Length: 262
Image (cartoon, helix red, strand yellow):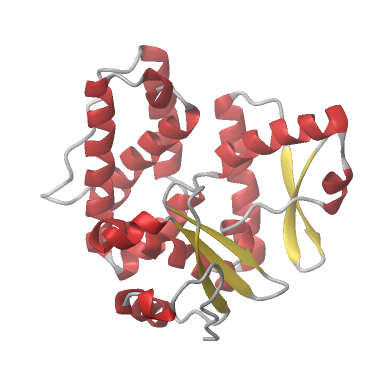
């Protein structure tokens, strides 16, 4: 593994040993760079197949509670592994270069479609967490229970703008799907999230998404098959949401990139 720990005055000494051990356990081979960023929620990864490197963006607060955020950091490291073994399409959304030349209304329309694609693509976390579960199964339970508690706090505090947005809905659906995906036969199944605070329409959407997410096939760890599975699954989720786009994956340079059928 080629490590490149720099950017934004990130001190190598700040990198916890457990992160380095996780990198070694996953046998990551590309260069890896951590950057501190205040404009992201927790952690985010960008994987570049041309440069063969990963940049993991991390909020500074992560270092104040390493135990809590281990879940998120290890999740990003599993994104990195899938990027190397399968495709960076499981880590980063890349688009055809022609979209970078748009301006005006055409650019706004592309941005609107790109946001819908992001929401329909978000279930890649199911596959990422499958890999994390194989290596650190204890983090799966912690992740599910931590998410449930956070959502329940929001429901008590009455934050409809957060609870009703699509990213939260997707998160709840993934949480429910992973509970069944990993603990369906467990005697100590995590406590399910109480969704009584949601309206019927929202609950129906969550249940429909969760049912689909739960049944996603395991990755074959073979690029052509898994890319086809990714494209097909994204299109199915687009239909569940009722989005007016049809995203497809194609090859451009060394990357699998997204485009929208007209």
